[in-house]
Length: 128
Image (cartoon, rainbow, N blue to C red; front, side, top):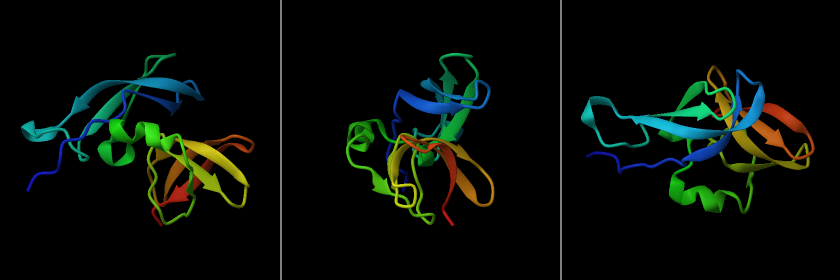
C-alpha cells in the first residue's frame, strides 16, 4: 500500500549553514524516486532567500502545508526521545523558554536546531 501524498510548506524559516543565520527559505523542488507520488519519504529542496544556496529535507522532517497554521499556536513540550518537525514550536522546561525548530543535524544522536525567544540558538537532541 502506498503512502498518502504529502505537500510541505512552501516557505519556512530555516538555519542557513552558509549565511549562519536563520533566513526565510522557499521550496525549490520536490524529488520523488521511481515515479512515486510525493510522500513523507520524498526529498524536498529549499533555497535560502539571501545566498540562494540549497538544502534538502525529507517529508518526515517537514510540516505538511495543511498543519502549518496549527503549529504557530501551542508549543509542544521538548522531550529528547520525541521527533520534531521544522517549523514546529517547542517549549523547554529547563530554559523556561519557547522556540522554533529551524533545522536538523544528522548524526548519532540526531539534533534539532532551535531558535529560542530568550535563550537564543541551541542544538538539542531528538529521537534518542
